[in-house]
Image 1 (cartoon, rainbow, N blue to C red):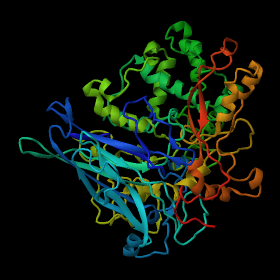
Image 2 (image 1 turned 30 degrees about the vertical axis):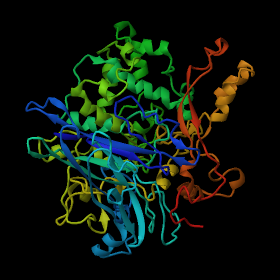
Image 3 (image 1 turned 90 degrees about the vertical axis):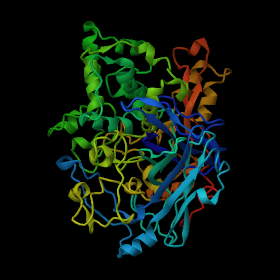
Image 4 (image 1 turned 120 degrees about the vertical axis):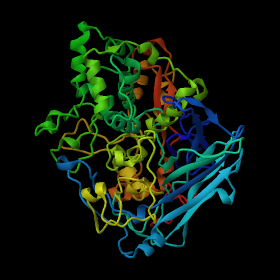
Length: 626
């Protein structure tokens, strides 16, 4: 009996309105009225958890709900970022990109007791049971909250149940603040600051009708930032990263050959096609790399042809993808202008192959099998959704689908440190199965430290991160509340919005970081409106369709704010992040004259607010520097 998804993701937002996190792979959320409450506040993404029972052969018997049992849910989340170590780069890349040791954040608090009291925001253990409990969200006993600096209250979300007794974890508001009025001086490590990202275990006790009491296998919840392009998955998702580990360790079975084009190959091509809507380097890919349009049905049909006569074409396309196995002395240049044009973990090290984004080996091996023709052409299945909701899936697939749906919506790199969670998730020690083979893959291992803080010495080195010390277990290992999100930037807005793109010596094309979650270049609503105007000439409408603008425009350094700096920009984002637009699908024009020039489906930036009103208290009520 287990809780699903095994790892859940809630996303912060300042609105009281909300929508459920994805529950079926390939079906993004579609909240009524869009992802924002007007153009100023973002709706919360709420993670729902379910319990499934299994027989002695691990076959799914069914979902357990309040209709046939009593379920008591418990959640313990915390934010321990301010008590953790600073981030410079990942600590697990060896000599290719050596990990740079990190000092403690807020190290002027020396004693462990002071650090815990002043820097740890502990939501405590919160329990809930029954049907439709706390439906209005205002029950004090279901709120998760703590304090920063001992006095500043910080909300960490709250719990509800739905009408079947399933758990719903509501995230906090996305607020950051500094009770000391400290300035922003780093993209990742700012002393005196807090935010409200949090994470921790989700547990449940089930009381059956026959009187037995059972504990379900635990899950984990992480409350992180918004996904500003929710219909566009990252080219490599967090699910891809963890499944790569599972297959490598034999915890999951690799698919047998021949592969399914629809299941194993098409998703990568589809993600590449969608990236063109959020990054100019992808939209203009044919200017720097010899590939066709992955969104073109005719091109896709040719890609799906496994015949020997099509082998040279497949091989020519495959050679355009970056080879993660090429790590030699010339790899940086050999793999430079390859797909995807994204930065990697080792961006701090000029000339390292890890300056560039690397595919997980499993995902790359599927591309290689495709190039070899070792797949079947089932492209038609990729074009037809096989489920509209979880109940449309066979019962046996539902638990795994819940986990995949959550993690497919998260970025799988580069981990510098990343968008939601980071590089530790590619290590087996993080998972319960590494500590007991009866556990399922994807379940986070639960720790039992006496404190939520962890003193590993003055510096967190690569060796300590992976092996711990004589007095403390390795941080890349069993986890406590707050352990997943503590590695991320503080406050979260500075890291998220500083890492848009990196301008290198070459002016074109420009590499990017995480465009599928934090867009770079977009088609704005105003341009889309012109594309749809039938009174404009086809040539003028195509002009607007082909034009893109910076998603972060108007925040700092341009126009009225011409004197603003990088630091002004990421500081401003602490108050303005909810003004940013979301990239969503919209129908294209149906005019026959434009059929060959503009696709039937466009992805448009909508609901963007004004950037001129500074630090509005209704959007970020934290203490901001003036």
